[in-house]
Image 1 (cartoon, helix red, strand yellow):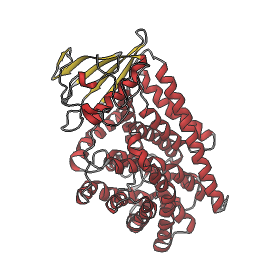
Image 2: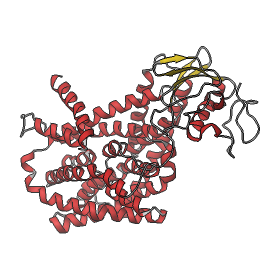
Image 3: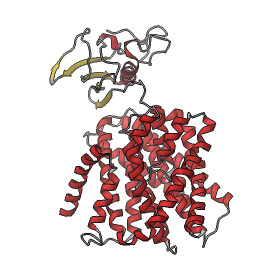
Image 4: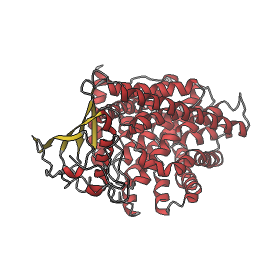
Length: 508
């Protein structure tokens, strides 16, 4: 317990150092594990099967948090491109990387295919943590997040299939059919568990707010288990369930996301440290240059080729394709997947693990810190889209109502709710702003009170207009005081609460 507590504290401090230096946190966590391992403090950990189980569990938490934090409106327009990248793009990357491993390094075709599959997946943890600190257009960030959330599923299938190639050979068409079947089952499991979970949490008032985050993460784990037991992709099911629940109007959403973020950090720290313990640094020197050659082929040939082939039909601008090609970050997922052939007893699988470890460390060190600079060089800014206000809902079961806590972002131009009067919110009948907290002082607003950046609002709404109230608040945050008056129909409230077409209900 002492060792674990010290590791966690060092890892937390390392996040601060990483944010200032630009060094990816995964490298610091791997370094902690290596320093504690055989060639460091002498702590022994040499069980790849246990590492695989723990790595899968950590990946479930990371994918769940990624889905909960991803906004559906950001990834919906780019879903076709992300889906093609996560399937066809993975196939192209596997073939090109495998050819490089076979002809440049001299690995057998089976080891080359395994290696190509292992490193072809972009890492969800690396992408989620790095991209959210880079000001990029929502469309581009959404595509990268969706790709990293979806491509783990086909990659796991490929690694397992190639690892069993010698004992259970499979025709290519059967392999493709198996991938499509598992993806379909994963999608169905994720949608079913996510929708049923959303329905249950929206209509069941739990006795304590701390139970909602636990219930949401339990649903994500249930989705993984259900998908895996049905012979489908549990990882894809987990991400889809998190995506549904994260975009649902659940009670205590900020608390749910904060809890999931903390659990995902613990999962990342534990996974990276254990992977650092599993590796033996003295054995890496022999595979350093093979890893560099394969990494160069992956980064400068395989990834750009897959991006161009998959995104050109969608008319993606060349600047965005360039950043997509460079943003194919690798992290713990390829290292975890490299334990699959080790568990399967594939000859020379230890060499695959060493090559993947070196490749991830070197190219993450190169790509991660240079992404912001490349984005600036390509003039890919975040655009002028407004940031949504943060709304937290708490059910008032006995009063048949809801208490909405609305936080207006304090960043300049973050939300167009700044400068709007309370009466101009035009909330539906049955909803009212009851309290405003500004600069540490709380007061009851009047209809002419002007809202400002950094304000926290307390809105009370009845059950019947709770959804309409939240939609209206988000609409004003994105479109300002004229939202709903310029050609867009208002959000529906209860019968009789809606004004003329093109206008929201008048305030009272």
